[in-house]
Image 1 (cartoon, one colour):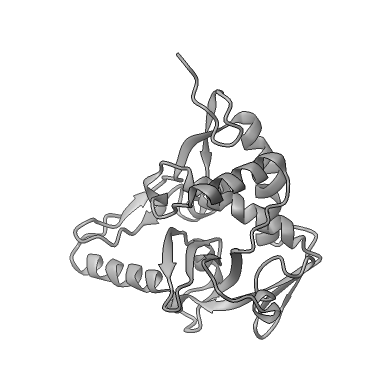
Image 2 (image 1 turned 180 degrees about the horizontal axis):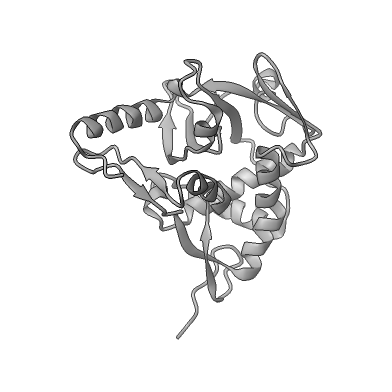
Length: 255
């Protein structure tokens, strides 16, 4: 039987059941819930249930899996869990990371975006990249050469709850299905939420001024300010919360 081709190197290999959003973030959630998380599907009539699905699919060969993990995933995980070599400080506007390799963080996040886009997992169905962009990312991730595209920008924010109802641990235990946004001014973005952070990958954005660019990841090579974002400002989270309350009132919570 012919072997499937690895999505990254494109050689026929035995593939690993691998994760686009790193498995470590799902494991963090499952540890909080005795081995399972809580799945809230906003569709009518579908109950809230316990779930241990970590959105994995057979994508990469062992060599490519190890390469992406060692180059990108491990570094990003250390940064987001404050276990790296960064200097982290709280400000009125957000969390400032200094002594940070922002170019590497950018590649870490782009590896997640690309892996989601080539996955057949239902949860990633909204992440569809143009073929040309997908191929540029694949070549960059496979070769280790820095990805450069003046039309793609990444904004990163630290989640908070100004109401004080949701504590930091619960915010870090939240993964929202990646989705796509089109803004009124025409800009478009793919959006991810995990481990207490909010990530937007902008494309078709018209701003080109240095001041505007300075707010995106990678402009400063050694530091980045994760501005605070109130969780209640995320429409998808509010919609999920309203759906969960409605399902509870209808007896559709099966935990």
